Image 1 (spheres, helix red, strand yellow):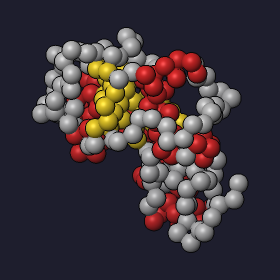
Image 2 (cartoon, rainbow, N blue to C red):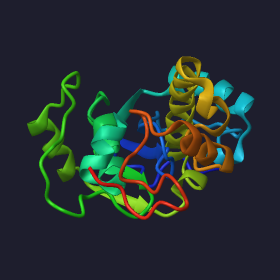
Image 3 (cartoon, rainbow, N blue to C red):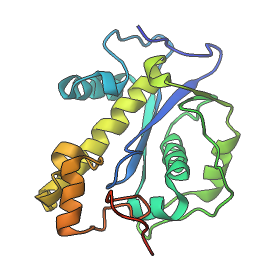
Image 4 (cartoon, rainbow, N blue to C red):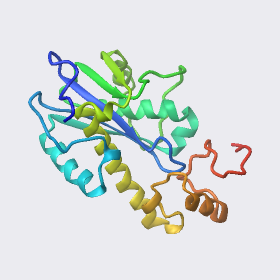
Length: 220
């Protein structure tokens, strides 16, 4: 069974992302704040669970968590600020939604700070409280390699990020089935690359990624 927390003396939230390695679609992140006494033997890293279990656990997580939030960074933003910064931005956007504000954060992976100083890039329909966003850099945090297989809150965040991103990619598939996003979820499968070669790029593709194996560069 996964550990319930890293620090018992703090209100502690876990955070993880999904979709970082995809060629298309947004990167999603989730943050989850559980009660100290929360336990669940089935809860695990989303990659270790089948689809049915992930969605069943999503209902439990949303019901039992004190608070949870989702953060989304779309393809156009990813192309502007790079995928690492986009993943961090998505996590910050998820954490902003937590109430009460956590006293400590445990983050899956090895980075929670921007690699480069850069302005916040926002699409017209998105609203980000910039001052509050900056504040979240100051919350004490610890990055944990493979944390989604070690701590309940990070595992829960991985499940929320994965399932909600899958839902979105299924919607994109219904709008344009040519790329079979319902199956590949935007990841670089042979089928997906072949569809890009045949039909070209869409607004949902990350233009800064190597979309085709024989592609030397992409000009903006």
